[in-house]
Length: 204
Image 1 (cartoon, helix red, strand yellow):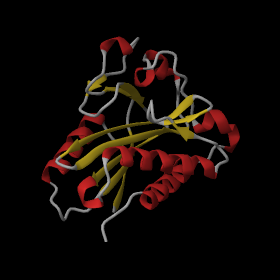
Image 2 (cartoon, rainbow, N blue to C red):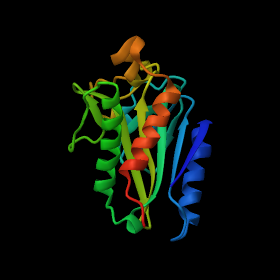
Image 3 (cartoon, rainbow, N blue to C red):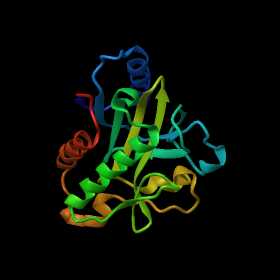
Image 4 (tube, rainbow, N blue to C red):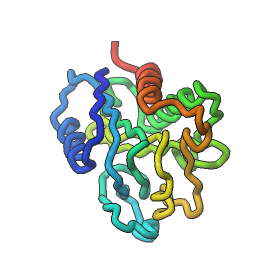
């Protein structure tokens, strides 16, 4: 599995690259994980409803093809795109979501944060506050999109939406919970990649 660290990347460019990679990959193409940050952007999923965007202000809203409602991406948040062949790994989409959630839960546990998933509202939560969002798309048995983890970011833009379509849902970050004990972005990145590579089954 290839892990690519892409830096800060425009959302449109990354979205197009994910779709192109998935359309062109073959049965032999190695799975990839892309780790990056985006400039401020709201992304609205396939079933997204306009009323969940309360006040976008100057932040663009982009309609995309993953599942789920609206979320926010911005600096200080790691976004991980998982380009994964489900058929080859013999994993279904629900299992993949759970594997991704568990990888984030394990990562947070490294810093003493007790987190959990919620089967009725996918993502990772700490005391009812969302710290990681997930959204995936499957094309011909291959998944793309992935997850976002709030590390050390401005949480104010989440007030401009109903996060993931839930009115009043509180959002948090590692920095908000850990204060000065919050690890550096790069430290979180390496631990997150290690947890994901360990969690995702790969063909022999």
